[in-house]
Image 1 (cartoon, rainbow, N blue to C red):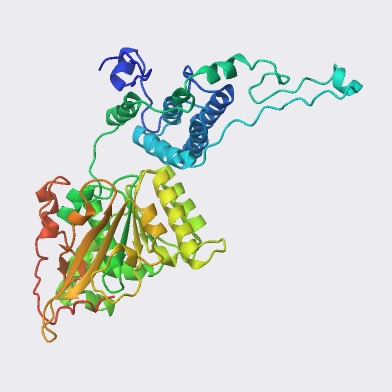
Image 2: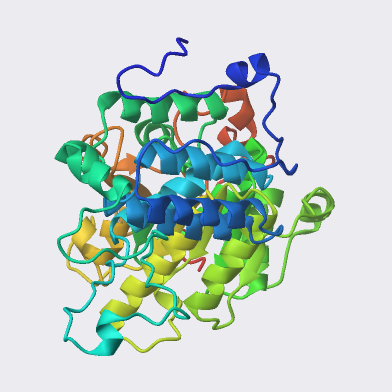
Length: 492
């Protein structure tokens, strides 16, 4: 790559360049030294604020680094939006400070992006410089006390009387064209940010949705993206979340589950039914067959010892969001599953719709702050139609606005009353990027009646190689699909 910044004045610093200069970026978990770079524009107030925020980030203690960087990005990009600071300077300095704190590069970029997005929505500028009052002829106005220093403005220079020329920095700033004063970005600057991301991150597919067509359309559950999954009671939202947890773990992803309603034993039974391929209805009643025991014992013995399940027990969303941030600050979390939105309340007092909006915002901000993907389950409103649409999300409006993707699920009896054939379907109702949502409707989602659990549907394409899903595609061992095994839809 050409090292000439070009007309835009933006150069992308790559690892190859740093190597040529004899420098090295700190590895994940290793602190480096933060050194402010040369400023290419902006007011003195904004430059000082940027340096102060960056030093706070570089010196942040472990467990607080992501949160400190997110807050710094929010504050700095408020100034960018207010025309006080160059966006290129903000990105460069915050990246340097984040890497100096020991965060990995993909954590740094995603956290900055999250804070920057929020900060740009609330632009601010340097406080106004104090003006001197017109002289009244009194002694205190005409003869300043030599023991009292002259008033200083926020740039550290003496306030000037009305009519006097502005300081050099202010005057030079005002002489710039409006496009530069208000920090319009060039195509070169936009593409430079993309190149920096490509240079700093190893490509990785998102956590699989369990459906090949949906994976191809939305790229799976990807870091920084929030997916809302809406379905009515009886579809199996919790069971779908368990399915994604097991599937993602087999892919090598780290997933945590935030449960707001069902007790832990309910989740344990559902996981056991799927992992040991035993009858879900028998487990529901605390029973099993004699020949189930070897698989039950093997499932328990082979289970991961990494903690992942947390029940809120009525905790307000403010605490839930703090838990997510604290866990994400200590280790990389690839997906946060929240089961489900409407059963988490706020400490603050709202009407119901505004409370759900607030809860959704708190969860989204916390998940994005730790550079994780989010899967948030939602109830649907009662309706006479079988196939739901996006407006059927309970307390809809703000929910889908805050989500990057919306998946909807439903089930329907395609058999006769005396011979039911219950099928489950999902569709992509909103897709921020990728395939148009209208192109992906009514995707069959495989369901195993015996274990009352979902199964991977379709042939895996770009997400993972087919053999990595072979154990989920094949029928469970010793499975006989008889009417006595399970009754579809009866398992909660």
